[in-house]
Image (cartoon, rainbow, N blue to C red):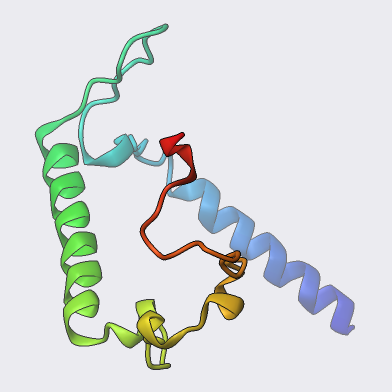
Length: 111
């Protein structure tokens, strides 16, 4: 008996859908404006809204980057103190020692 009740319920719903008649056709507009056809090997045509959104997004991106460069430079440059290169020895820098009779500032190409 319960299957008969379910069948009647489904038929009743189907009849109600058929009585409504034809439904209104909905036209979807892509992107909120007229659709622009693709052009072969040419730059795409941009609407004013797309241009404004691109400018706004790129401006926000550069604001974010420069703000964090200024207010949190450790995120870019690291959290360690920079070494003082004037305190390094020639050996640490890989510079060979001077030979006998050579002084700093002399060039061997003077001959």
